[in-house]
Length: 572
Image (cartoon, rainbow, N blue to C red; front, top):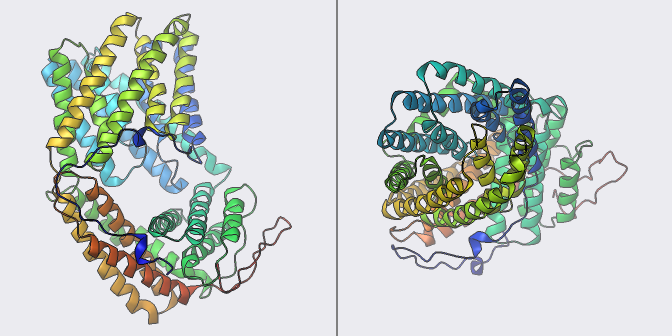
């Protein structure tokens, strides 16, 4: 490997509160390459029920249909087979949380009870989403809906009809999310593989620990996407071979980043997938991925996945400190707002719940972003409110516009997306009837400030001593995976490839655990020398396996009248 010891000089970490950044969390980044997919999906999924209710003159029911429509924000990075299951699960989870909130609201008007239930739901939703790694937007949408429903007027006999509206809108959202499979069946897999090729090109062009880890994570994500994509197709076979080239790039003596980027561009485009050099070994079991896919779908594989999920929720889970922070922070925020006379302190609960990230430092970053975005969003709401009150259609169009703007902007930075989320959330209240603008603005500002203060206070005071223990376990798992990969060097090709993928996954988990622990307060010093040695040894083993399994060099047919240049020695 070309990484030198100067790439990462270890520095001792002391086990106390670390400095908190002020400017870096607010810098704008590049937008996601798929930002328009959730943005368009949520607009379409919301427009159908919104316009239907507008035609029926029942815009007062928008809150219940919006709960289902917002499910269209999930699953856009998943292959369609898994996306269908994931979005269906989100719809059912949304309905379950909404049901609990509506039943509670119909049985009691006690603010103390409503805040307690809201905090419990927020903590449960946080743990569940983190355990299954649902991805953006995470639990915040579920918490927003359930917390708002707790403080909405409700009768017990209305609950079934309102839940039916949510499920109906959720069905529309499911169709919107899964429908593109009819047009471009392998779209998510192509994007995942293109990211892996681009990361591998960056790794070759600028060797170093950061690009090395980014490339390993992107390759791991591409394999996971292909494993979950369903039955093999010719396109997926080509994508599998492209991922192998991305894996082998770091070990190649004369890699060509330009060729990797050219493949990535063709893979991401709508044309044919580039045909890389043929892979060695039986075509029916390319690098063992078919056997691995079958094992995951077998009953034993599903049971193992369930056991892993249950362990992540057990008494020793690393998720429990974050759950405790969410519960305490949301409850404290809600009770503070209630004590200061806010009639519906649900926004304080949502603000606190949205802050909690993997560690204290990231939670601080989100606190800054959320506070700035909400306060600016309140000003936008005040400016737009007169326009939205010109008629029901104007109100619907304003909500749809801000739904699109939120998803279009949030990938640049969370605070920028919050500028659009805040007026959208406030405009939803207008469907039930006009409210005094000054009261809405004042309550929202108070909720935001108190929610952010209470939420971060809970994150700072509730320690997460398990972060360092997770690093120790990740070190042991990485060492075991490296040993198994070295043993597999003399085994059949499929076994080597499976061991290589397992080692890649362990190295990605090790870096994730180390990054989380590094940003956590009140931690003992991290074993940085061991981390550095484990990562370097793991990547050396990956390089050795890549050299053993690298496909022969041959320029791929692009099917567009161009042939990419082949590198001088081996695959890219």
